[in-house]
Length: 117
Image (cartoon, rainbow, N blue to C red):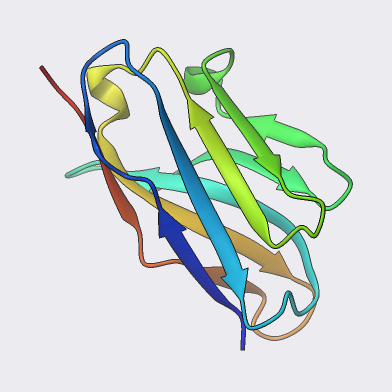
């Protein structure tokens, strides 16, 4: 059974940088894409960035030019490099993986990112 384990969440000042990691343990199953979502307090969960097995990234408009998603060669770990962080980036960040089989997707437990002075 695939499990997604996030790490890297922290408190950071505005303008700072942070890197999140997500490890797919227990094998990759038939995962064909991985990504990051975030959910701020009182708001809906939203897609931040995703990357396919082939390496094609997709970004939310609000993070384009500031965040970079990448993966390791084994495609078991996906990273989210966040720069020029803003207060509005504060949220719980969740790792997500899309799977051809059942279940159709996996979720991590979330990691808190807080941007504040």
